[in-house]
Length: 131
Image (tube, rainbow, N blue to C red):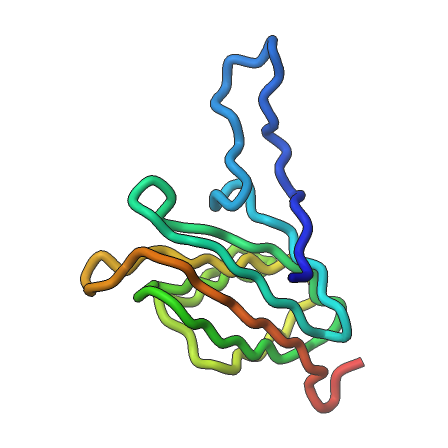
């Protein structure tokens, strides 16, 4: 598994009365590190934690290929400009802009088998004509 926790600017300390940032929450995504343009992550969706978000950086125009095994989920990809695609994505998504993307999974409350272990595989490839 090639992931590292990070990206959370809201960590709670003893004098802070704001709620703690839960790594994986949409406002505190888990930062992914790609090795050879690939990363795999796994986890579990449950009634208490029915969603998880992962962030990653793209330096040049690229294509994201992803696959997921596990419970029924909705997927949203938030682009560096804040625009979002989803709640469903094709298996290959062009990423035209450089910057930070957030890939979010959430249990699909309109389906059955929405909780349990999942495995997410992400691959980045250079788009033809990109730098």
